[in-house]
Length: 200
Image 1 (cartoon, rainbow, N blue to C red):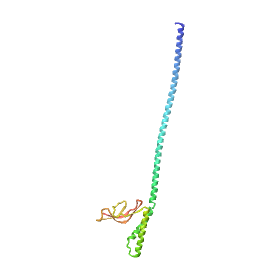
Image 2 (cartoon, one colour; image 1 turned 90 degrees about the horizontal axis):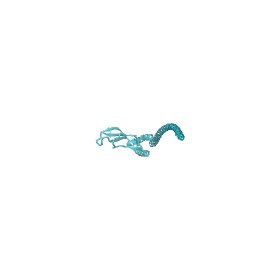
Image 3 (cartoon, rainbow, N blue to C red; image 1 turned 180 degrees about the vertical axis):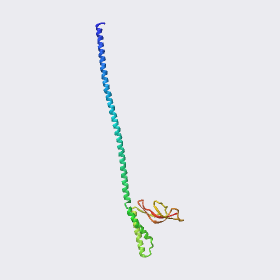
Image 4 (cartoon, rainbow, N blue to C red; image 1 turned 90 degrees about the vertical axis):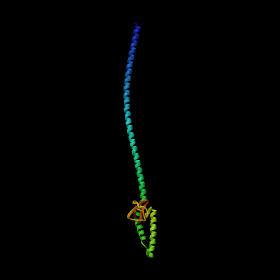
């Protein structure tokens, strides 16, 4: 072999050694970069897991708060509606105690009118009582108090109080044939049941 060939082989060998060294350096750098990447990716994955957990907790809290807000709104609406009903009922039935007291006056007038008038003075007094009763009933009606006189109606235990039952061939069973005391309602709500005699 010539000296030139030997030199070329040495150069080739040196170049090969350089390439090997460069490849080794490159592999070392790649390994180092891979390690850093793996470390970085592992850190990012942990951070992503942490953020996902925080997001789930925030969504759960938001759902809980939404549910609470809806319940609170519904409760407030119910309270408002109940208050409106109570105010409405208070207006409608505010005079119930007064009405009950007035019923005693009406009953007295009706009992007085049931008596026979034998003298001129008692006839005049009876006429005055009739006018007073008519005015009183008219005034009560203006305030929603309605008189219930259920003669010939079917007995209803929610509206009537049976004082007695008697056999009556002229009436169907369970029919009211006489009224001892008339009943009254205030704006559709019974404040006193009619006391009645019912056919058997």
